[in-house]
Image (cartoon, helix red, strand yellow):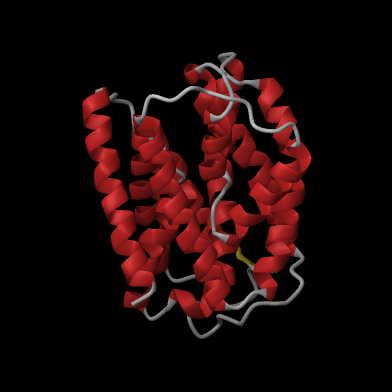
Amino acid sequence: MPIEFTVFLILIGLACGLVSTQIRVSPALTCLTALYFFLPVIGMPVDQYISIVIATILVACLPMHLYHWLTAMKAGRVEYSLLLKYAPGLAMGGVIGAQLVSLSNVEVLLAFISFTLLLNIFISVLEWQVHQQRSVPNFPLPIGLLAGGMSVLGANDGHTVARLLYQLHPHSNENRDGTLHGMSVFLSFSALIGFVFPALQPVAISHIVASDAWLAGAIYIPAALALGAGLLFGSLLTRWQVSHYEHKILLACFNLYLIVCLFRIWQ
């Protein structure tokens, strides 16, 4: 992989890691929208290589989620009952979703991505409201299966849907981040397996990068390593805490950015 492309991915990862950790949104969501804007500049239109982009992003997010999940477990800030309730369904949905990504056309995947962006906006607005927490119907396996499959089809690591599930259960807010990272670990790891053995091989990218030799199924390994390193270090650099009011402003700006991305996707 060219050194310029490596530096480009590391910088994208650093920026997305900082933003994701600071305002607590899905790193896969920030990576996808950023790459959708910048990859065409270097001659790599996202629409043409959508399955490779989705697979690489989800695998790249795995080290960041794993690190923060292990840190939260060490501090005792994980809701194990909720995590174990949905983890099997999310894992199964991740494998199935990865297979469906390889079989779906660009329009279908862009529709799921757009739904994920809208869902993220809805959930962030819902967090501002005062609402009574209620338990969802007790069907964890089908709910997790549906959530995992739709998340992967929408190029998401499960973090967005997991936030919604967590809000619908009466649990402590201080354990939220660790639990969400744990759910994303299960989903991302299972999606990795599905992407390594896709139902349909993606289009070759040898005319964009140096060689297809590092393409494991639908995952371009050098890009995943560079992007993953940037995401992890970017999240570790976020040491300061913003106030509740500043967090709302940043989140509103990010939602506006997602709306612009929606227009960009369907223009």
